[in-house]
Length: 272
Image 1 (cartoon, rainbow, N blue to C red):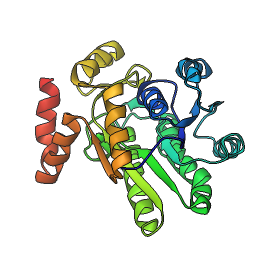
Image 2: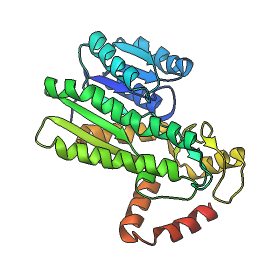
Image 3: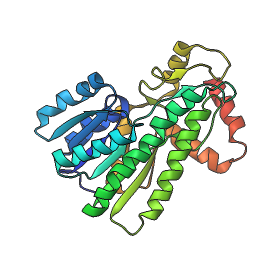
């Protein structure tokens, strides 16, 4: 098992959800923390109780879609902590809309955070990890980086892109001391549905409140449970981390019925 005590963990999207749960649990494992989020108030809410743990902690308010800001972030982390060992590119957003009606600015906003944020975080810290001769990059994809559903075309595109990017990175770093993991959460009870740019649901109706309530019914895994699974995967050095029974089921379904899973998945979603 990979030891975590004394390591510096970098987490984007640390202001809520999985990012907040990871910060809390990695702190309990003895990690020093460099936490980033675009929302300063939420970021402080994550950091405040962890400052009592006696470990080094820094907070950084930034937009992961901003390349220069991400590289400045890496420089600030290295200057304050003296290094970084675990880089978790977690920040993410969602848009619910059909591709025919999806606006370019919404697509660009989502890709800037979900895909380019991962690229920026990886590129900003990778030279240091290689020079240091130690490190682990963890990129958050989704079960929607394995299967696709209607009205999630932009989200699917970003998460499939994260998966492809991360799997290529893992192959390129084979034989080096740098580990790479891709995480595929299923339905996790976070605020992503409520903070999404919601335009149209699967049934063609536009009701963000009902969509969020439906998401809550389908999301069976808490952020705390997700964080535990991810940390277990990190310690075990797993290249692929599926989070939740739904993620495992849909992964198996896609492998079994690669061309026909959408029909069965559609029935399951309509039933839910």
